[in-house]
Amino acid sequence: DIVHKPKSRYVKPLAIQGDNDVATIKEELNAGHLVLLNISLISKNPNKLKSVIAELKGHVKSIEGDIARIDDDKVLLTPNDVGIIKKRH
Image 1 (tube, one colour):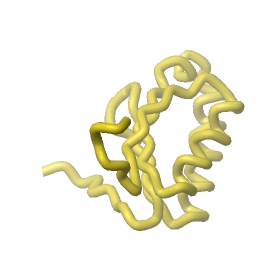
Image 2 (cartoon, helix red, strand yellow):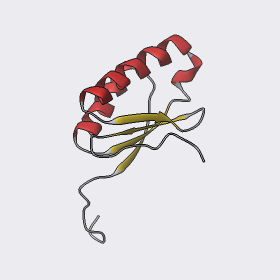
Image 3 (cartoon, one colour):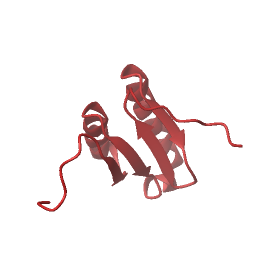
Image 4 (cartoon, helix red, strand yellow):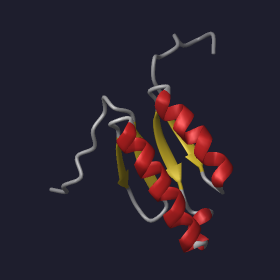
């Protein structure tokens, strides 16, 4: 994009369909990007969803990031220098 100056971090909307996508999500977090994850496709398989979310939670914890479910279809994952306020007002 030659019109806009590159940024150091981005919010990356990603959709997860299976295990192959987990590596991509981890790479984005390791690079310091925030991931807005669409889980609607994998949510049809609750066991797979639970397994993938558990793996992502473990990774987020290992990099001292944060994770929160936004709604039925979206999960927000952040790198270590971005926190999520989970208490609703």
